[in-house]
Image 1: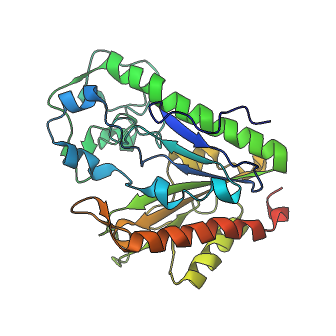
Image 2 (image 1 turned 180 degrees about the vertical axis):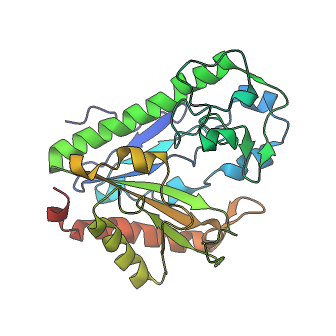
Image 3 (image 1 turned 120 degrees about the vertical axis):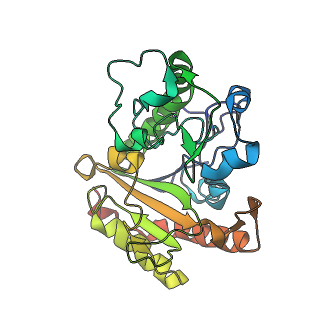
Length: 289
């Protein structure tokens, strides 16, 4: 039995909402929609609260909120991505932003870290610097301990219990992207399915999601411009019966980016994502075992 409580306090690092009975071998996760901005971050920030939210996948957790009602667990980070980014390796750290010696296992050469987008981000979307000065290394490591590891421990627990129950597990990692996101041909994209170029899941999963979304009226892009982040790559191990697919939704479909508020499209998109979740009841599990 899954021994996580049905709901963890939103004051904690993450919220896990379990269905009354898990009937789907699927986990939905929203790692970037957290919006509890800690005082220690705000006091050190050189930008205002609105600008801090530039990297937030605002309201994505609400777009997939029907998952527990439809038989699947939902995991949501409560802390913001700008505070700790769980879609990175824990030790992807930019040495230029810290005061003190980083641990010997710090991945200081990661391209994400060097661009300011490591597990403790230096910048928000658009490359805007977050902090007035250097952060103490001890503070960065404390954030990783209290936010990063609990999120991943909760996710691994859900994966393990789902795989034991069904013989396999599917992770849908849920994200949003800026309204001006384009693919390699410079065409605007509304929805991206990322499977790490076929490495993070059986191709039947990508086809299953693609077919449904096309029937809904979308033209999903595959792996362009987003092929899947750390969570998709790390947990997507088809040979271990864990299949991971990243979904990116264009924010203009459901919100006004200039005010970070939902518009009339929100209810439409939430209904479509609820239908996608329900559609997993029709999935042929023989591909994934």
